[in-house]
Image (cartoon, rainbow, N blue to C red; front, side, top):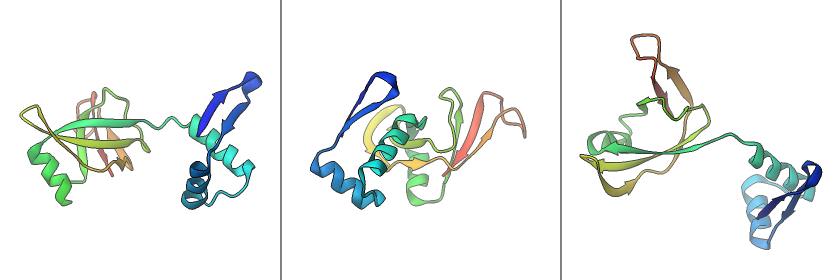
Length: 124
């Protein structure tokens, strides 16, 4: 799918056959109007995707399903709805392993309950 900005806030969107099939299958989108609405909503989205280095011990706990939260310095302005991919590191060295992305469902921002104001806890 190609999206170009046009004058007067109009979008010029072109779809190939593969894009159209994906929209139909993934979103139940059938008409051109629905495709334009979907493409515009994607452009307007403020969702970010964060790639976070995670030490082996914690990476394994998430992978096994025992750990479903992260405590992080909130230097990335984490928001509910953002996507997070955890990348395994061993003593700071990349291990070329990562978990499938997950969506942040809840965030407890710091400054209360003993959590430093610069940190947050989020879960998926």
